[in-house]
Length: 303
Image (cartoon, rainbow, N blue to C red; front, side, top):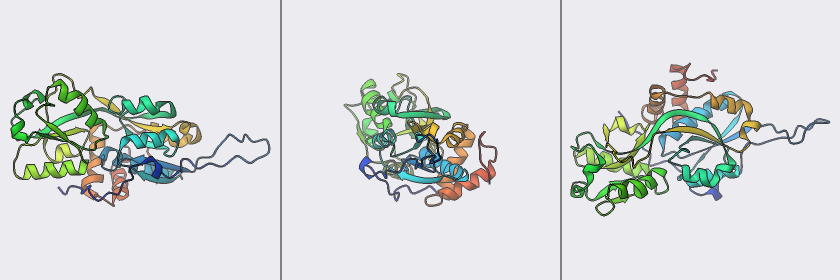
């Protein structure tokens, strides 16, 4: 299987760079019309392209909202914090794949008053610590005393990721690993590069991961058991909107609320976007997926 090269994605990492687009609006303009009533014509989707759950669902929404007649703008960022801030400020209309219940709870505590939940599209998402299947340990507990096997490193993703905070602030202290291991943060693409290199040489490596994530199957990863529950409970993946989005863009919000994907549907979508078609062909991949899955969800829009 050809795996997608994530390295070349250009992303913007600061709120200051967000285009102040939001839902573009026009007043009613008719005599006696309510000037507060607005027509939504442009929808800005904010997502982190290195996190392929959001990459896949962003292009799914681009396709579906475009078929409803909206102009859809795609805004890429590199960290979750600026994305939540942009969503709260109205610079971004929709975050297509958020983890607000646990992983991103800190951002919801900070910005949640200016964010509305548009619905959960996937149940049972989880944060994990993983190794290739050939590594002969099965529990996070087994990492203790084995730091030399892994070079004293746990290979992580972006520094601002909720997964990074959960690993650094909860898992490592709970299992008393912070004296033996260093959590290496950089990017999802860099983590996958390290993982691929280790697997090619059948070397021991431990990484931060999550489900759903295409790399679990592509690299035959094994989630380590977490008897202390330090990586948190499973949660749902949500579509989030800036406050007032559902009122301004009612038919868009109705479509979004109707999207629920099971493991098979989500897995096939992500695999087609990330692996079968790859970078630069995401829109084409979504169209192919919809042709193959015309009844994928309740509110699906066809040509």
